[in-house]
Length: 266
Length: 294
Image 1 (spheres, one colour):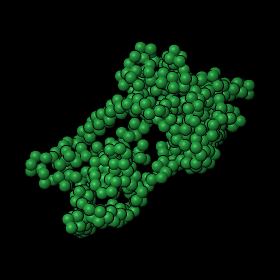
Image 2 (tube, one colour):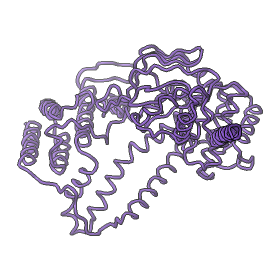
Image 3 (cartoon, rainbow over the protein chains, first blue to last red):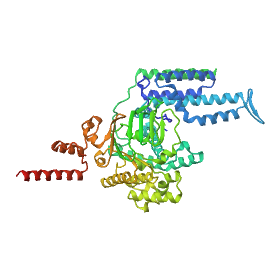
Image 4 (cartoon, rainbow over the protein chains, first blue to last red):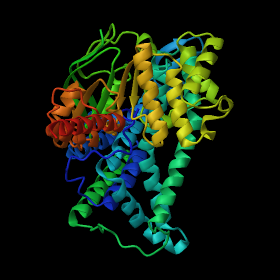
């Protein structure tokens, strides 16, 4: 199960992207999301795709790993494609059955929406693939620092994000343990009919939820017993240092963002 | 038939950049009807080895032969249900593996899946529960209402209830108190001797299993560093620290005794009682000899 869900896992290849400041990567991801929204034409999407491939290749993580990160959403993507195909009309009629017909404009809109989704999900996986949860925490905290004035606690939000990210694999492991125990006692999900599959998965909910709460309680107790207090003055073991490389990385994203938005407008 | 691992390797996440090799070129033979102990330091591949025994994991290289079934890397596995009916696997942290609404439902889950009638399943559940020393009053409870130790015993009972030919247990005694651990080992020993079941136990407490195990396998860095009888383990115990394990005290004491009295040809006495009895015999013999000379 963990093999299939890659988001939230660090893949350390020691690339230059891994060494960047997490704040730079977070800023770049926000810009990337803006680019995906702003890419309003196929040429803009082509430029964005080419840029994405270059950045992904520079992390030295195989491209197929990025694509795998988008795989869990394939059903949603198929749904979007079908809805677009049926809802958007115009251009040539490709398939017709009675009053229903799929037009070229619908297929194009569907393909376009799916391509944008694949790009967004697979590219943003770069953040967790190249940043350890601890660094990501520090990055989120640093990015939210200006919001302290309006009563938002960056430390609290960073802690929540960090723990949530760390818990994803732990909870998946717990679910997998139970599924293995079920399989071992004669109910292998792979071999069961769909109705039984659904029943077995429902049976997982209670123990996995209880397990997650138990872990959360243990973690809280463990942190408190080691003197952790929210809002208490703390020094950082490895303080973040912003370098010219980080500025360059963000600058490239700003530049490509402008190009993509410009191509979209013309 | 027994169990055979032939050039078996296993890699987690084999097709991803996070791949981790847990077993490398493992060749092991485990005898049928025997009690085998498996030991090794953390991360040596013990748990992975066990999960290959009932097809929960399939080898990424080599072949695992269990009874009359064969699981080979790259080949489509046979239907696994018959294998799982005959090989009962108790995972590490078994207390996390209970999922049904009541303990009775959880204990009957395996037998029902393998074709037992509801009455037979209920009977097996009660028998297994009694074997683990738990009262029938617990049957109606939700598994999460049991204490940690009770849950662990219940999880072991859920596998015993299936009546498998081969019982595989991954550190079943961890978190149990010493009395419960000792009772559990004796129960497994009895199942092996009286009912002819094959029992395979992964343990960090080698000393507690030494008096009962027929054979040992020592895992080190994903390989089977040692496999043999208890006598062979005693003879090569000096190498255990190389595999990240301390020499168990009963073996240390026996080696001192055999060196002092020249007992190398004897079966080692590895339980405190057997060792004490043997020492008493030796002391008496010495005393008799002294009297004779006097």
